[in-house]
Length: 333
Image 1 (cartoon, rainbow, N blue to C red):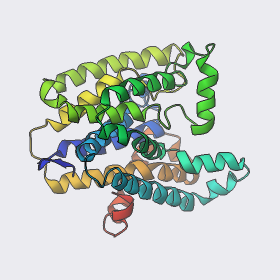
Image 2: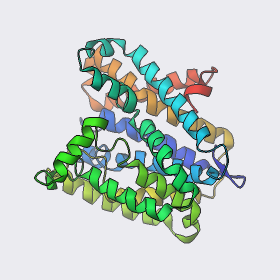
Image 3: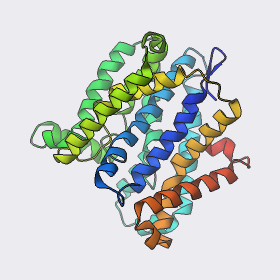
């Protein structure tokens, strides 16, 4: 469980698990077989707050430790071990998929291993590694305002190939974002999304925004409603190419995090630790499970809700077993 000044942030770990499950809803398109508007509201909308929230959590606690001589090396080492371990796990467990794609250009194969992994889920970890490596020296010097400006510009650039793609198709940004995705595969991978949200987490810590922003829970609900309006507007009009980089997420994700760190009810360290470990495990493993369900049980996978439930249950079972072994100290930390 994360701590600061001996205070435990149990709700942060609980929300880590909640958002990991929401990521599973994105990839399984959980409500696609139920209702199209519900699918848009969830898989294309609310669930997309997950990764911004993860980045903010990382930025907040990194900033708390940034003056330590061990940082950022300790964090980067842990993330590198986590990333490499899960890339290896994906490669071994999805060997039929890997072998079927060996005809791809070697450059693309290397890029996948470096930035997104076999399934694509690991892009969050690689982006976090890249961003921490770049911005940690500036965080140490408290250049947060500068990083927020740069991060916002990068985020706007990323939206030109994602949520707001339709508005930029015939502009000078279009070939630029295509060049960027030629390296990182997706507009949100690398530094376009992570710099802003990691810095927002650092800003919350530095300026103690949790003490200054009152009624964060109510404001979070209002901001989520605004995000849903943005979601439907962009997806129904065809402006959005994908749904990873909403402008309203810049408001929603920090407010949700502030609400979490101000949550006053006690959550035991045991529950908090379990939530954190399950969140990492479910996030990193679920697409492996989902792919095998699609291959072995296509009839079940045809129904998106059944696919989501099967993926969640099997992933949770596997992570439960891993938590009983020493392997958890490598792939669940």
